[in-house]
Length: 194
Image (cartoon, rainbow, N blue to C red; front, side, top):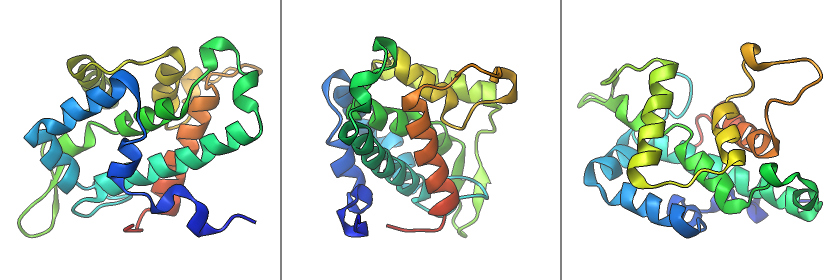
C-alpha cells in the first residue's frame, strides 16, 4: 500500500522545478527571472471559477500537476512501460514536468486578484489565442519541445471530439499522464492549499 506521505504531493514548486534538466531548466530559469512573470506565477488564481481560484492558486495548481505527473511517471518506470514505447512517444520525467509547467502558462496573464480579493479578467483569450500565447513563451524563452511533449500539450485537457477517430490513438502516453495530472488537480484537489 502506498502512503500519502510517500507521494510527491508534498514537494514544493521549487523542488519540482529543480528536477527539470537540460535546456528546459535554463528556459524555466529565464522565464522565472523576469519579475513580471514571477509575480504573475506567485499571485494569480488558477482559474476564474472552477479550480484554485484564490491568490497563488495558479502556482499551487502547477505544483500539484507536476507532483502528480512525477508519481505517474514513476508508475511507468516501475512497470518498464517507458522502455516499450515507440521512439517518438518516449519521454522522461523532465519532459512531463515541463508540459505541466507550460500547460496553463497563459493563465497568470489572464486573471488577477484585485485589492478586494475578487478575480478579474485582465486579458481575455480564446483557446486559439491561448495556444499562440503558449507557443510565444516556448519560443521566447527557448523551451525545447519533443514530439511527445507537443502531443501532450495538445491533449493535456483530453482529446477533443474533432480529433477523435474510433480505433486510433490521438493522445500518446505522456499526454495521458499529463491529462490525468491536470484533471486530478483541477477536479480532485481544486480547493487544496498545499
